[in-house]
Length: 396
Ligand code: RM4
Ligand code: MN
Ligand code: MN
Image: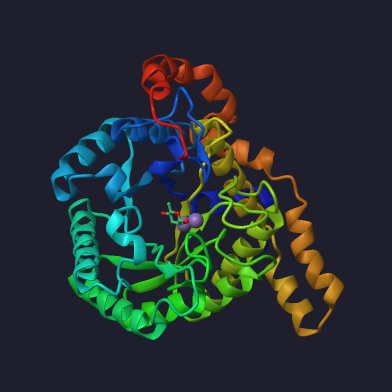
């Protein structure tokens, strides 16, 4: 017998958790400057506190991704502070993101830098990050490299590829069995001629070279216009190489806009591929769902609540696809019927069922409203406004 729609939504939501990025609560901007917000978080404690609010209201964001340079500037020595802050604000440390792009020495790259000393420094930072992840008892080290070049002929792409492979192998050797390396790709920016890990094929090759616990991380904003991301997801699932996502939306490039704000059907199609895979194989892949967004115009906490709510809605809709019907229609090449399996699920209003689930878990049925009524924003605005007004906003 088929589950009722609300049963399907309930069991889908029970299995869905999404990680928040600490940097999504801080003042960020554009290439031309930062727009400061009075309520933005600038300390680790403030970021954990804000993330804790989103988790308290939605119930599905128990972990916070950390950027080592921004959140643990003293490396391992900051681990106790992270533990204490996480405990205090009701969250846990999430994926550990080494920062291999901000230091001046990385002007010509990190693991791909022609200077061996700089490559060694970059690897040392990754090895520290592996150790930080182990101490914080978190599974994933999430690697994104800005490495690349701006002008033809200026870098040896093959040599850089080999340096990357060697260093990723060394990082993999450092991990214990509970840890994973996630390898993120991005076609361009900040490098505008070549990027060392430019697409999912390169990330896949590096993951395979690194070792069995290295997987590919798909950031939804890191593709060329109109690329079929769900096909990439389907391939990675079939290869058992999909490690996680950085969710955001985009219209032009790596815009880091709110999930589902431009093309919610895209995210639905990605979720559908995952659920269809689970139905077909009877297995549940170990995928880290993470948000990677920068909210420089919207209120940061509100934007995060909106993101999480949208993710739940799209995930719940994807749970409504009738897989048996879809499989039959695909076998018979009944194109309209097959496509309608997706469209019917996508156009179902799942919000009442989600509200019902939230109520059953003792959570607010409208987290955004609950946030606005909580007084939290007024309190942090009062506490943080002066410091944020004094922070640097200039571009040049
Ligand atoms: C990059 C990429 C990384 C993120 C940095 C801040 O574009 O998406 O995941 O850590 O931005
Ligand atoms: Mn990302
Ligand atoms: Mn990005």
